[in-house]
Image (cartoon, rainbow, N blue to C red; front, side, top):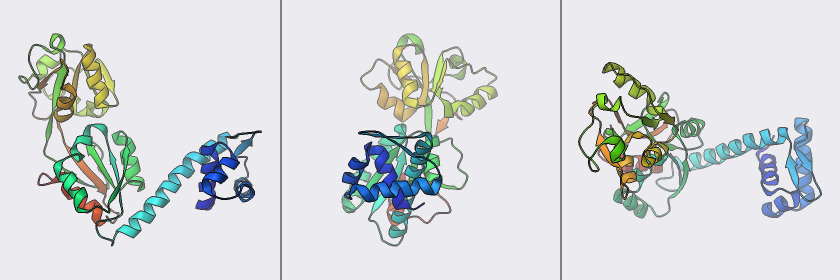
Length: 295
């Protein structure tokens, strides 16, 4: 299979017709149809069901489409990476970030960095930690801005200073107070309906176990913002990183209480593949994101 043939196939699937794909690719329809037939002959399967006006991918076609998208993404990433290694701070930085780390990028230092290198461009992928780690290890992105804990085998990680987890809830659920109120103990938390991001579960279990307390969550979710949303309804108390929680609480009736537990913290971390050469732009961006707080 050639990358060009795969790109043609992806265009046909996404456009929904061979004629529309030909127009989008700026080629005539007959050679595009011939490329599709060649790909089907090579694989020995029917990839597209032809209709009067539209085409529909078969089960085999849908499977190839997902693989082809990933292969094309990796090929483009490889071209960019090779061209940028010795090219200075220019080109495109392929960056991934989770939702609660987004504000770490949008700082005056980052704005100054962009102004210093006006020819630099960015491709940003957003997703959960597991998705971004997959993209990073596959080479589809060059840097990932994540939160600990995560499996860091094969990665080079630069972490900012620790950020504590906080309890967030409405006054009737968490207690009286105001944003950034008094610290709350694990003993007090053990009796509350808790909701938290799934990746924090092992961290919380270990801390509660050391305190001799049970951890019986009301709900476990896949995004810190979801946990905070549940807290805003009054049905539970969310456990979330302090920075994300503080931003979410602004303009709401929610109160935020630091946790009185030394081991319950997370770090914003800039990760890259240890074995892969890094572009000058990625190195410079890592230094800007971490500043003097890298560890």
